[in-house]
Image 1 (spheres, one colour):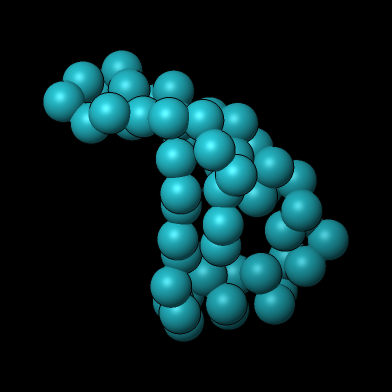
Image 2 (cartoon, rainbow, N blue to C red):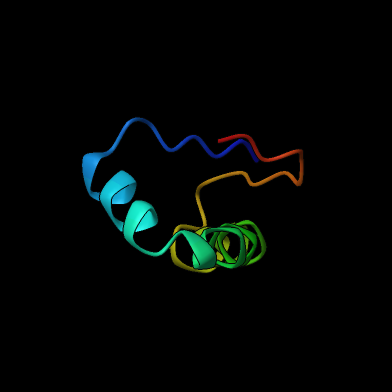
Amino acid sequence: MNIFIGENRHLRKFFHQYAEHEAAIMNDLYERLPTLLTLHFPNINCKQEMLSI
């Protein structure tokens, strides 16, 4: 599944303020998002691929 987070001023501001947590949050996102999408949106065909941001 490819994940793309475009330019988002709210995320930029958050990660600027909490830069030390950015890596942990992004890793958590990579791990949880495919499962959440599969559980809540079963019509989406999720494949495990390299996630890109």
